[in-house]
Image 1 (cartoon, rainbow, N blue to C red):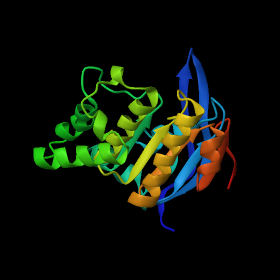
Image 2 (cartoon, rainbow, N blue to C red):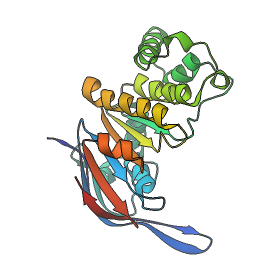
Image 3 (spheres, one colour):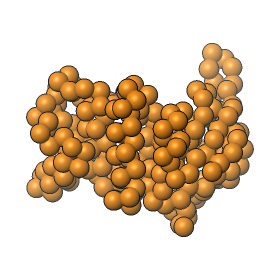
Length: 226
């Protein structure tokens, strides 16, 4: 199986209250294309920090990371920005929807900023909302929807850009177990039906059980994998 990401001796630290925190320590990892990979661990284990590195949100400090076989240190900032915009979809714990926009408008918003032609944009938005089961809620605003429905909108927003990879940071943490299970099923379907790689940071046992591969982190280091 082809590797989407490969990391070698990756380290990341930051300063908090004048104290240096070692978020990731000499981490080696590999993430396969088209698989659902769960980064599992308790709060502070380094899983969100690793997601930020994989999404090119945090700059690489030490070590090497390859994306699709190429060192990310060889990409220009313009190339990294293009990958973030067009190849990576993000799903977060807190949804990050725009309250004054409808579900349809939230999904379309970033496509419009990326200057996707309007006709294509409308097709992508409609298809994404249908896929997550929210076609009938397209004209509702976030305040008129449940937490699970809002997370579905967030997934539709990520899916509409037709990404190669979706990075999901604790997407079920604010949801009840049934709704969380439904969201996980959607993420699994993304891999199976769209060939999209899903990398999810979570300590949710359902996510760990449903993932194709689990990387267990503790104190910024790889504890084990399956």
